[in-house]
Image 1 (spheres, one colour):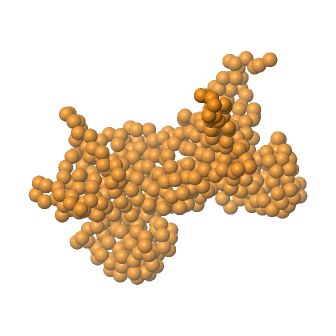
Image 2 (tube, one colour; image 1 turned 180 degrees about the vertical axis):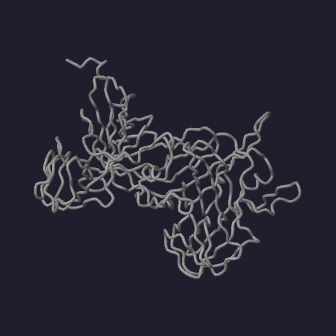
Image 3 (cartoon, rainbow, N blue to C red; image 1 turned 120 degrees about the vertical axis):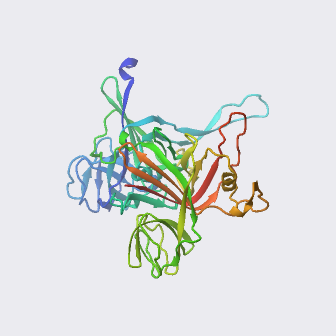
Length: 482
């Protein structure tokens, strides 16, 4: 007899938990083959594994989540039933993991779908059925709030890339050129509490984040919702039980993390009359000090561009001691001695149309398909591109010039003449400053910019708000928060 429907209605989404290898956690290998449904692992070393630990067996598309049940016995580790979902071989990696509760999430769904193709024949008007190809498990939800750590989790970046002490001198920050996205092994568990008090949990192994849909919207009183999209490389697993492992709640998304107020957005351009000097020593990636050949006019709060070794980055100065400049934005690359350092001008837009300021990640991810399996093996990350979209509420020649990436010389008197100069004068970078509900300041920076010239539509009509759509694309992005 089927269970009465009203007892099995979903009462609440009890949680979204992302499981990743534990920083500095135990790592070992299998000392013996482990069969599907096995509830015991024989490890090369069981040191560092504990009761109720989440454990990841295998790596990349072969990784699966299991829960340790009890303390190790010698080199043997017992697993919570029903054990392994599939077989694993001697030598495969076994890692202690950590389960991060992501707090109050919304729009939770399993958007899994399969590749199907109609079977058509020349002698019939209708297809004779379908062939089912690869199945892709795609768990999705929206995370409420913003923090550099959330962005790292949802792009597959190592959490070690979240740096800083959370002070004005050294804000919490993350910076990337997108090459670190998408391959951090993880599992995802979505849990429901049903009306009869029982749990139904949905496990997805070897998840790769789809960072190409990640958008952050800015605006007065607008809730910040981060769309989390994952592709699971292995089987979805559904169980009538609560997740029985230790859970870390320290990264839980909270309402106080909402970006509540957009302060301003603007551009960086080189100040032709400001400081122009070079580095007299190498600055290594993640350092925050730069040794200058000259430092006349350097002051806290000013912005500078460092360029060398084929890389460039916008810097935010904090202090100067002799010729050593300390910055709040750590170096995203290693800059060699002789790299140029130039002072920048920070120019905010005068008024922005409500709801139009967005920071978006894009690029590509490529599905992996095995010919001998129906389940897709997740995705491989491709290139990543970051875009700032804004609409200043002033249809001026200057904003039209910025839209076309024209040099200042293209404006002559009351005329803007593009000629053959379109796309030749992109800004050095862009910035967006905002405040969270807990009054903490957040800052987004883009360096090494180009203009989105493929998006040049502009609405014109009676009583239309005279705005101009601008798009600035870049490879390097830094996100900071005090």
